Length: 112
Image (cartoon, rainbow, N blue to C red; front, top):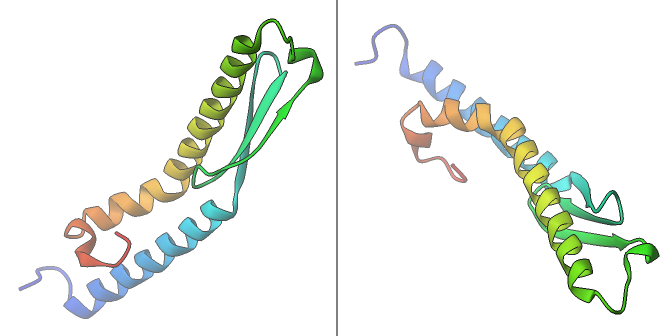
């Protein structure tokens, strides 16, 4: 039924991959990424899961006559931090997800 290997070995391999995936997800959720905009005038920190954790604004960025520019800088910093978090997630989870996906679409494993 399984040419070139036995079912027990295949299941052990899938279980190990799932454990690796869960560990990588946990590490990702605990990680933080910071990115900035406007030459560092505004920075945003997000978790590896993309949750906004903080925003720092240099007082030089605050111009009461141009609040829209500050809003744009905040938005750009948050988007940049989220993009970095996505890159980190792809680096950590990508290879494991691909391997599990190649084994029957995740084999119905939780979280896959």
